[in-house]
Image (cartoon, rainbow, N blue to C red; front, side):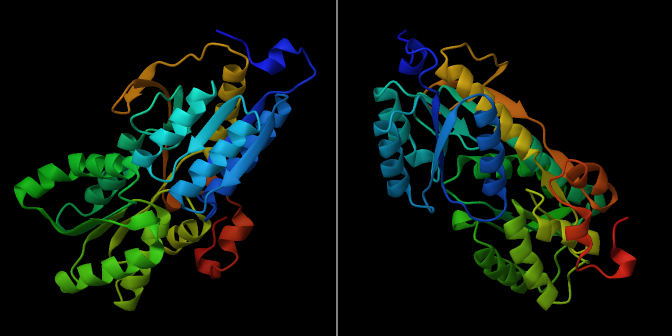
Length: 330
């Protein structure tokens, strides 16, 4: 296999890594990008990044520009997993290695997938709620239908819930996916679910914190915030505050700085032509993709300090700023 040009040229050129991000909205991806850039720079690599704003065609064009600019490795966070194959194909045609970041590009020759265990995330969300509300009406609010990971999370939730449903202990009164994880759409979905269930909802399993926030807004309007259990994912500041207030039950924290740094390290290894060591593989409907699965963590009111605060992902100052004295975390 031919070595990248920067290796043949000795130290005259640095490895160049492209980081294509589906949309820089919310807290999550900015944190990832900053950690990725810092680690890549420390390893002697240059990073070019692009924000597609949730547009699949734009992301395709941005990656083609990166390829023209001479990247050695593409780190791809796809907007639509099913539509990302053409992006990977374009990169591979130009001899550019591809790492699928957090979401797996389907039907394509991806070299590496770095993510968190989505089965574990979905099961954590469902188990936390049914352990505390083993009977009653449940609402499932899934992520974007174009995100394969959203479906994996949903299916994992159902693995936990199905025995309760089969026994008649749990009734799922609403179950749907929210395009592009939009909080306002989750709010509308939750309003309709509350109407269907006459306000009687024991638990809301929201796939991420944005969706949880939309659901909580609807619950507040019905006087149910803090009475109905709500799950989330990502440990966004607003949701951690809601957990401290008791209106959100839990979130799943993914140490994303660890994920970003690890991905930067693997990207540099790929650029140098070094072998990547993995113990897992995930099939993307074309190949078994070597996979690095990182472990998520449940965050509830009792362990906020020991998780997101300890890691520096959130700060006590930010969490406590809008909390009354009796709810502040010390």
